Image (cartoon, rainbow, N blue to C red):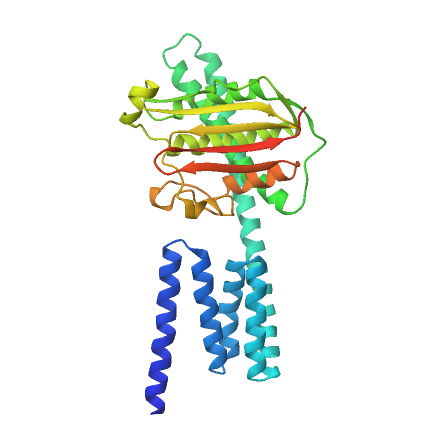
Length: 336
């Protein structure tokens, strides 16, 4: 009988593990957190609190906020029912695991920062070499190709800087004193940069309802936010024949800015694949992916950086999206 009970217990634990993996595969952290929490509760009822601790840590990390607090309270009550000593042992184990996770995260962040910093240095040198080649190739048929390569180097530098800046913002390092940022010249420059990156038949342009306005902000960070938003739009806006009768082309990405009340609103609007409703609530999270099924290369840090950068300057950021219709990513800033 004891052996049968052990087998049933092992089978139950395996079932929980399968459930967690399936929820994670479905990219639903809320359900995964709930499954992990149920694992923790089951192990406490079995009198195995130390084994429950890792599940509790993962569950609370996935749930966050009030949901995590409610999990902790329910877990505490369950532990007290089997004895205070159990709760104290589990609490100690959870603290140890949290410390271990924090140390591992710090190591990963430091390593990533070093790699990206070195990559940025290499790309910077490559960009200078390309600029030198452009000057020497004036009038040559290769000028266009060299100019395109030079523009792409600039974009790589922007993206590398995005990762490094996200780390600085997480560490609480704020931007320098804001200045008056003219948005129309910046938008037009970036539209020119990204034009070759748009898919064939997709038009990238300044929005027709855009205005010549200024914001009070850190210019470099606003530029980097726009680089990320436009870069995402070029990746996920594919040619669509159904748009030809209405637009005259197979897709469109429009970038604009205008005054709205006491704020300046900036947006990137596209006719891309759109974002499923279940992903909208966490699209600006760290390592979040806009559309898991698209198989696009991404760090998952671009939108996370955008949120940190805009909110650090007193602004707001959001997205309105409909699947198979398109998305509008927007942010607001104080007027200049």
